[in-house]
Amino acid sequence: MDGHTFVGQLRDDHETALSRLGSSKSLYALTGGEMNAPNVRAAAHDEASTAARLFADWADSEDDPDAAPVFQQVADDEQAHVDAIGSEEGSPDTSQAMYETLEGFSDFPARLGALAGRTLVTKKTAEQMVGFFVGDADPSSANTFRSLRDDYDDHLDAVADALDQACKTDEQWDEAKAAADAVVEAAYDDYVETLESMGVKPKNVC
Image (cartoon, rainbow, N blue to C red; front, side):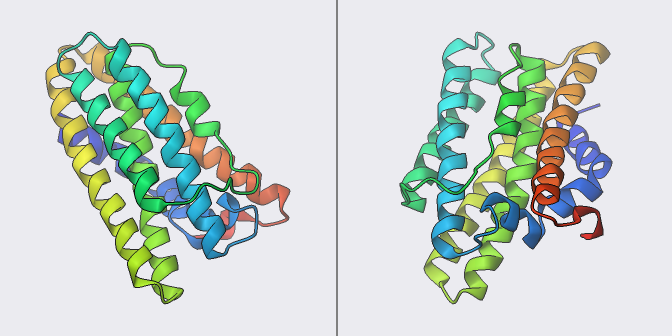
């Protein structure tokens, strides 16, 4: 196993969930059914703000010399995303379910795996936001979210490289994979529950 194989396997294992998390229904859920530009931007702002705080905390508490710089870079990038998005309004019913799962991990193999899972999810969301703003005839905002999407590609590469250094045993790879699976599943379960509460059948989304 190596880090890039790990990320590829994670993507393949959750292909259906990630596809649905990258659909327009995902934005519908994120905005509480109020899918307009201010609410899409606000949902992205809330997510980036939460991520910046969490990964800064991980960087501060992490002793591993390979993992800590990855967490710090993600925290710095997410703070830059907050500034680039430029919204201070909270979105309706923005869920933190994925971050509640992330907060449960305390050591670097699991945290690196969890970050990989989170990055696959947020990359899908960013891709959908690019499409939203293209459709909204707002090329400036579309370019902002393209930049976020590109950062997530960089984060996946950094996580893969750090996993190569951090995981020396099968047990550590298994720990990272279990954490990654849990994060993607938390995001998808929240997506399903949110849409069902709004009277939408998410399993019909491809």
